[in-house]
Length: 220
Image 1 (cartoon, rainbow, N blue to C red):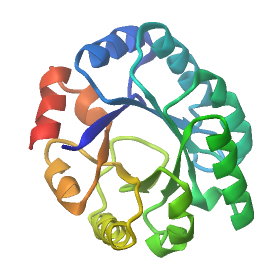
Image 2 (image 1 turned 180 degrees about the vertical axis):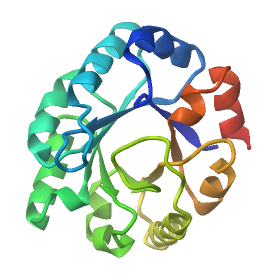
Image 3 (image 1 turned 45 degrees about the vertical axis):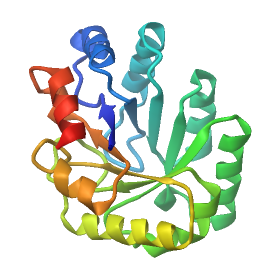
Image 4 (image 1 turned 30 degrees about the vertical axis):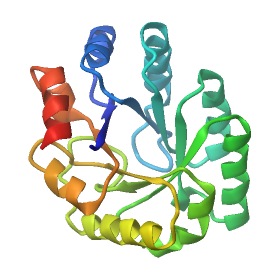
């Protein structure tokens, strides 16, 4: 059964505590924290996500799934280590030097945090194969990173299928997460492509019954 990581990107500040409590009661598997710096992507969510994470830590033990869409990856890793997220994922495209990618992977693991590597829709999956034995998760962006509410790019599902086949053939133990345009209408094809964790934002946040929506997302 696929796990659900609820993106809180579309949560309004005045409703945040209530929404986080409702998601806790609805048994989301993770809170997906979309951190953007206004450089790697146009939007900047650094401050609001910091506030939201502090609120969540006060009321919930549900794991944090931190997704860094930033240029200065090391700086943000250091900022989020103290809140002890379940996983920190950063973008392959944000780092030019492959040796630095390995250094960042090791740095996160040294702090007893799981590591994810994310790729944009236009990045070929083969580009990250060499890093797969050292990480815990690949996050395949199924929309262009930077904003919520976009339509899933169908071609990215082929990439997920390709990745699933590769990790099975090479006996690599890691999860595949997909993020972007996933809702009750698209979850079935995402699951069939081989995803272990689905990031869902507005498809849950804008629904009337979080518990029922999450249940349907898992069981479709």
